[in-house]
Image 1 (cartoon, one colour):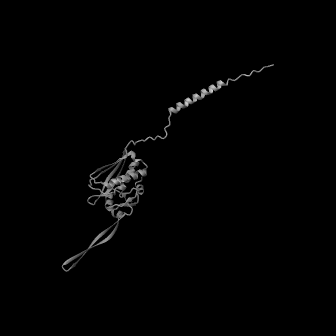
Image 2 (cartoon, one colour):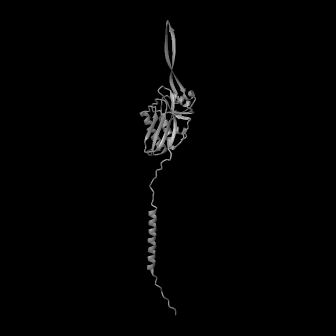
Image 3 (tube, helix red, strand yellow):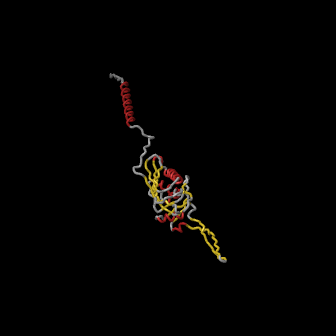
Length: 251
């Protein structure tokens, strides 16, 4: 008759091996964790390798009442948010400085680029001794947006108008003279503030009569309205705000 013997299993050995495996696995995990730390919530700021740049032609009325054109350049360099001007032979005082600051703020909102990381440099070179008033505001804004986006502006389109913080383009004077200056430098399209595509002025007419030995003259004034585009021979388009203007510059 056969006898069966039951072999007692040594569970202690299995438990010991299992513990060794767990400890080894934890050690490997810890080593992996320390060798590859997480880097979330860290943003690396990369500065542009070359300066960003845009150029636009400004139009204005000089001290003699004549329309003049001068190139404006806007350069964007890595910096800490400074606005710098490099202006020669010009009296571009507080109103234009305000326009530059407004242009910077509007361009920041349009492009969604934090200008606190860049310096903006505005350069104008001209022979005119005076280009006053805030009428360059719209052009300054267009050029700033183009520079931040590193876009080349069309050189056959020019613009005049003030700029408001809301982006509205406001009225200016001397539109007829500015349109002439724009055409003279090769512009085909001249953007003007809404409602200023026509100009109304009083035309003097003198009538004289002889009475006895005297001549009496009387001057009357006739109100005349002209279409600036037809008068100058350039396409004049009215725009209400900077968003409309940017579409013509393909920005």
